[in-house]
Amino acid sequence: RNSVELSSMAAASLAARERQAAALKRMLDLNRERDDAMGPWQEPWKVLVYDRLCKDIISPILRVGDLRERGITLYLLLDSERDPIPDVPAIYFVMPTQENVRLIGQDLSRRLYDAYHINFCSPVPRPLLEDLAQLALRADAVSQIAQVVDQHVSFVSLEADMVDLQIKDAFARLNDPAASDAKVEAAVDAIVTSVFSLVATLGAVPVIRCPKGGAAEMVATMLTQRVRDQLKAGSPFFSDSGSSVAFQRPVLILLERSTDLGPLLQHPWSYRALCHDLLGMRLNRLTCEEEAEEPSARGKSNTYNLEATDTFWGEHAGAAFPAVAEAVDTALQAYRTEIEAFGPGAVQAAADGTLDIDSQLNQSTQQLQSAMSALPALQERKRNIDMHTNIATALLHKIRNSSLDLFVGAEEAILGGRPSAQDKADVEKLIADGSQGAAADRLRLLCLYFLCCRPPAAELEPLVGAMHKQGVDMRPFGFIKEMVAFQSTVATSAPAPPANSGGVMNSVFKAVGGSAISLTSTLRANVKDLLPARREMSTTAVVSAIMDGRTLPQIERFLTMDPKLVQDGPVPEGAKRGPFRDAIVVMIGGGNYLEYQNLREHAQQSGGAKRVLYCATEMLSGAEFLAQLSKLSKPS
Image 1 (cartoon, rainbow, N blue to C red):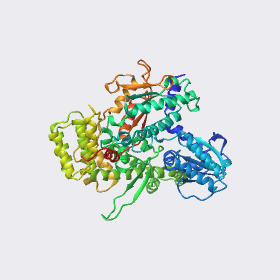
Image 2 (image 1 turned 120 degrees about the vertical axis):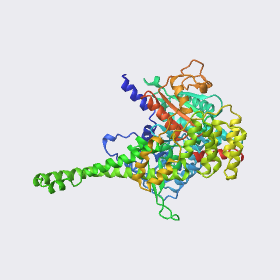
Image 3 (image 1 turned 90 degrees about the horizontal axis):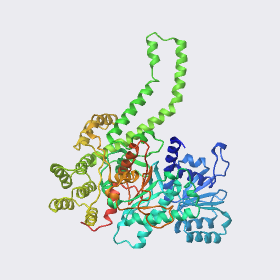
Image 4 (image 1 turned 90 degrees about the vertical axis):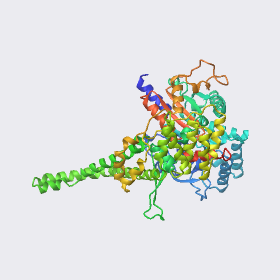
């Protein structure tokens, strides 16, 4: 096969979002293949019933139009009050839980629908399946159950190369010293189930690499056995594993958050990461609140969906914030130029006496037709520009109110290598002063300062004391101190902040005066001072070394497991350990957009030689991670 064909095969091997969308559409087609070339599929209207997790699985991928195309006229939550629709079949898409099975049993007894197509997002345990059968028998509704299907799609595809497993509080559950073995095993099993769903959806049997000991090895061992069992049973999920692309098997790299806390503590500076950290973006949706004219009033709220079809988002999501502001301004100017092309040029020609009436009438008609045909696309562009202008403005307000540029600059100094005495003094002042940023911002900076610089007790205690006086909850810092006490080193990584950390944003706001256009132009005047420094994070260094087959101190004790081998446990020395073209990176304990963007840029720099799919047990903002750390330690 030629290189182009092999490249397209490799690209398809990590198309999690595309494959999951296909699986969901097939489910909505009653688990039958649909030939779109044959025209509209003549099926009765259907009702979709889902729980909250499965709603989250669907919402980033399928829109209302996609549901209607599949005949879905109504979509309802399983735990909501629902009226009977006896002549319509229902598609259930739910987690395999005792409560969900009980609610389905209630629907059966109430005869809510004509037929029941029950789909579980992950494999249903046999005891729950038996409970469902008993409930169907009691309701005398066995004949109405058309299907019971395990879909293996228990993950959320946020981007083409990023997956959120939606396993809440995984870091706290796995690192709680008071947690029982049963709770830890339940958390590990949930991770294994979701990661298995991912590899089953991809149809790939990966080589697995993980650090020795801890949750990662537990997940790797259980996942290896689960995939191996499916291969022995002839599972259709891995039917392509023996094809001509088998030599392009991906590597699945399991990493633990506890070995690198830095990315979740750092303040972001890129567009997508800022939307997540400051505006609470979830499932690619965020809400911006406009500033009210009066201090006592509440501003208008706007909710936006940042979709894969948004070309501006696709091009600039990973860019530094000032570059995004400049791009918004450029897009707006381009839009205005295109609009002016339909302006009163003919009027000026008539005023000059150079206009031929007959030819102008013909040109005016053509111009009107051209304008009418271009109008829908122009309106959509304007809506998109307005949306990103509003988001950028909301971010700028957040940056100003939290003095974010000061914190990003301070973190650049301490994470950039060897901070000077003045750098340390500036960091300590920012922490102890208490007048800049929120308490959580200062706490994040203190934690990073401790992890990177390990200041002596004589320097650290006054900072901790000052934060106690400010009323800051110091439990997250207490846990980090406890963790460091049991680790010889804690890997940290650098953010992508601006080189100049002075009060640039404050001067920007003074010049802006609230105008979105002047906001972007003013930022463009300062963009050189705000360009981020690009560095390779610890996670990226580990992934790069494994994919290249290189040695690195961090991976010397990594284990290798292969589900295709009959033997249990790690494979012998000398087994295949790279190079790999495709990598699935699973961060156990939570990830964020800083880490994702750093891996993404590394893959892009390879010129297509590498593809990386980033996967996290959950996507965490800095505040959300601090909340988990608070659960793990007594007050410091």
